[in-house]
Length: 181
Image (cartoon, rainbow, N blue to C red; front, side, top):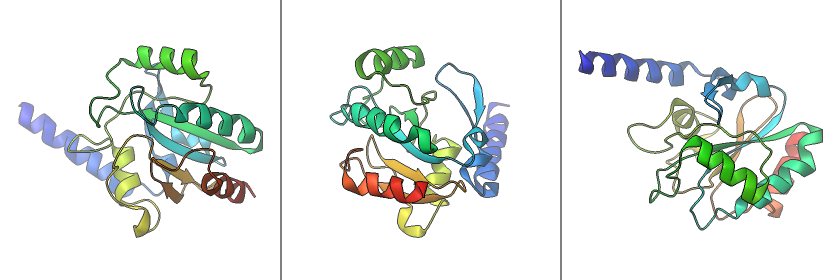
């Protein structure tokens, strides 16, 4: 019985990834556990980031918040997806993550429930981002926390930035400015 359920669930996830044309085809639980369609962000330029609270890159939260504040009035949004895939650097509950981000970094951009971004249990959104979205040059496994995907107003991935590319880098700010035009 359990094996049959697991097989059906796996096939359902694979079907959703294969049928997805854009980011807007996905529904994810927000940090408070409420389902949210990513279609709610249609027409915006989106930066998707897998985040972690106990990582050497965690201070990037400050840069992400600054980037969000600077461009949100122009139709830009950041979507944070906590993930515990790398050295258990996001061990907390969704509530603990929310409290940490709010208190330590004043995060106001949308945060989502913890997901898996690597391995057999990778969430369908991240399966899509790493295998189907954008050009082949954007594909490949997530290597660490704070990997960033820039999505155009049409819901399609236009750039990928590895963790060492900071939110305040000219590479990211120029890509965001270009996508907002």
